[in-house]
Image (tube, rainbow, N blue to C red):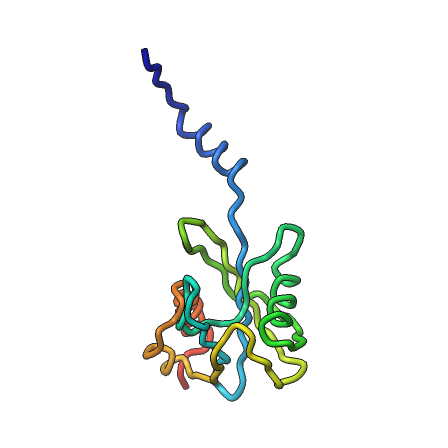
Length: 151
């Protein structure tokens, strides 16, 4: 005999949020002369050959700011200064839920060593509409259009 039972929705929702921790992802947004720095991911990953605002997943003990600093060091061998958080959202990648935080970033040095990207470029918001962007970053572009309307 198979027993079936279900929990009330409020208890079920509590248990999911208590036991399932959403992963944190970060994006660094660098603005220079009305253009934003984007990087093209190398092929072979879930977002390979897509343009993105550089950043990545936070490790268990990291704050989003710490993760962003570490990711820029790992991906470009460059130091950054993390500024104000200007956007956040959620996305799904490989059946995992992520919360993404976008921060304004300043490069300490502009000499980037590409380790996980094939190239970088500076793009206006209008130019970004023609690029194949990572799904997680499309929502950042929409936020930037509100924050930095065309002149």
